[in-house]
Length: 337
Ligand SMILES: NC(=O)c1ccc[n+]([C@@H]2O[C@H](COP(=O)([O-])OP(=O)(O)OC[C@H]3O[C@@H](n4cnc5c(N)ncnc54)[C@H](OP(=O)(O)O)[C@@H]3O)[C@@H](O)[C@H]2O)c1
Image 1 (cartoon, rainbow, N blue to C red):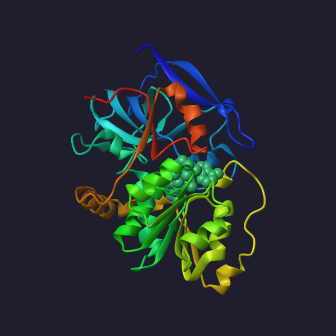
Image 2: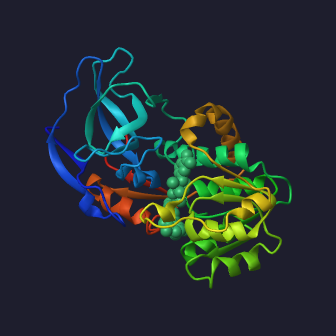
Image 3: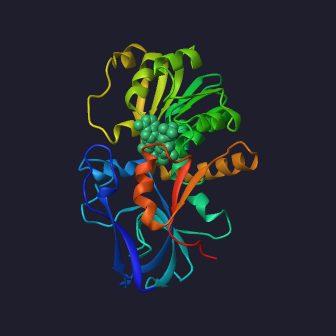
């Protein structure tokens, strides 16, 4: 316990992010001050929003500062406490550093996790922020009605796979897209979607929608943006809802945005963005519904777990090439007993 490996953000990327934006460094062991805890981190969530945070764009989370240790959602175990409410052995989740060890001040999003309720990894996976995001978007903005057509982009991912299955639970006809044939097969054969296609190999999004959504799209759970959203606009039905969850195809590129958006007016479409952290009050309802769906076998999920803190930069870069299948998690240390 004398050395600590950390990942530092060292350069703002232009265009497609690569590993040169990060440096893996050996740092001294941190020492907790009064009111702090020393954490040994063991899981980190790797997420698309980290790419926009690498720019100076004005957003709901502050940009990463060049030179800072990277951070994001993670789980750690307390190894030393100088805070009255925390004991060695307590497990916490919150915004943690990409570091094997860190001194942290409890507060903000940090919370203790009770052991034995679910596997630790599930708190970042099926019980975590990605699934809650799907829940919030579907419940607050999608408002699905029986028999409506729901289209989900990036449908095999952490958010998309849950949104798509919620659509089935709520009685929609669900169509999904993903970037490999394996993912498409999983959507159809395991998740039971009514149709799915590989957006990389179809002639165009337009032909794919003509084939798979012949009556049009009532609800779009939008994770990708760009040409995907452009094509959705041409197929959205009157009074359609576009749940603007993300636009991952736009995070690594700069360029002109949507065209012909008058269809939002002519088709009286509701297009609404949201950020999951504004809706943590929905956590109890989500947890209760998800527990029931899991028990009844109505929700299936996948994770990609990559080991080693030194692999986090290249794994995050791979997220933007679709190298993950389901929720992407980095394991940076062993789970507590
Ligand atoms: N609003 C919120 O509060 C909130 C919260 C969490 C996440 N999000 C958003 O939700 C979306 C999904 O996030 P996630 O955590 O569930 O990630 P994810 O879907 O598990 O992983 C990202 C996936 O996006 C696909 N992708 C990457 N680049 C793409 C491109 N250029 N074009 C089309 N597809 C691309 C890849 O799958 P393929 O193999 O299918 O290409 C990749 O595996 C993101 O847009 C994210 O920003 C929003």
